[in-house]
Image (cartoon, rainbow, N blue to C red; front, side, top):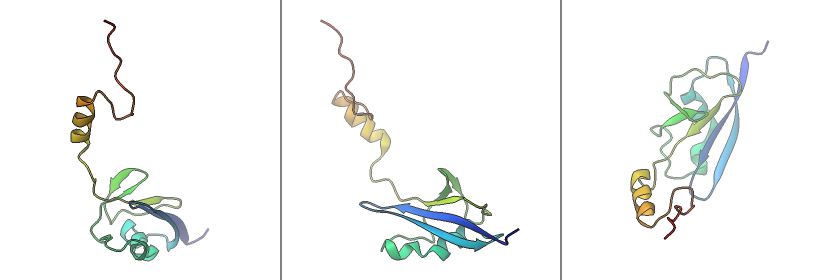
Length: 106
């Protein structure tokens, strides 16, 4: 039995996505993985110490213990409020899926 685990640390910025494999000791936390990955060097301006984090789409704290194969995700702020985008699209007769609303026959 190994005393190490392998996890991925990922971040998608505007224009590029980086996925890094990180080898850590058993008992490592989400915060440990982010720091060990060095992912901040790929994204100048990304505050990796304060950015929200998750594992497979679920928000988690920095102190959460990792399991082998976990995918640590570093989230970025939304560029637009989803509710406002839906309102704007609805006013144009569109939906988030890009399809037009069905027109009633006249």
